[in-house]
Length: 260
Image (cartoon, helix red, strand yellow):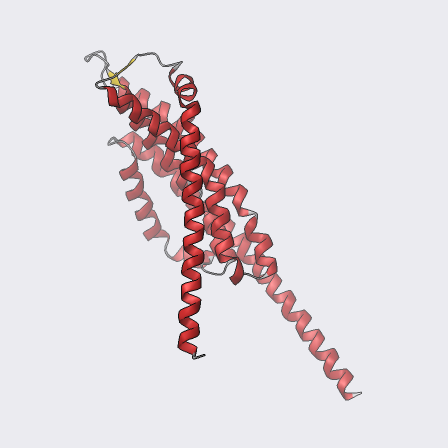
């Protein structure tokens, strides 16, 4: 068989494997989305029970959209570990046994950080921004919240934070694979800051306080990612040096045995 034919076969096999992993992830997402609708009303009542105001409906389809938003957040949260595991299974053949053991530990970390990001957005960021925006009315306006607008606002304050809080684990994962290193991250810091600031402005409501409350955690997350990348990188370097020393000793012993 020609080398070109082998490359084509390998490419097809990789694409088929990727397709399989994507299908499993999507099936998991849609199954959990359907299952989420069973409990969506209970979740809705938990979210709105302590609100100091009533939510209004402008049309019969609004409540369905709200239920879909809630179910989608629950489904994405449940799918994160499955998606991470499927990604790990896809790249596993290219990893050494040691790399496999290290990288699989990132799967629960992704899930935990996503929950932390959602919690940060819901319990800290969302109340601060909402109270600030309400205080701007200063009793000059009648407060009127529609259910659809309220939950869209809640979605913008929580889901992006869940995704962005996974930045440290993604950076550590890529560092452990040798794709990036902390020194490269330091060199692109200015560009990374610019991108994070743009992302913060895009995902947050159009007011200065919301932008600041989103930008600061993201910049801290980036610096935390750089520090964690340094730790992983140093461990990899030490392991590489130890392996080189062992190989050097083994080579010397082998050479000495041959001479004797």
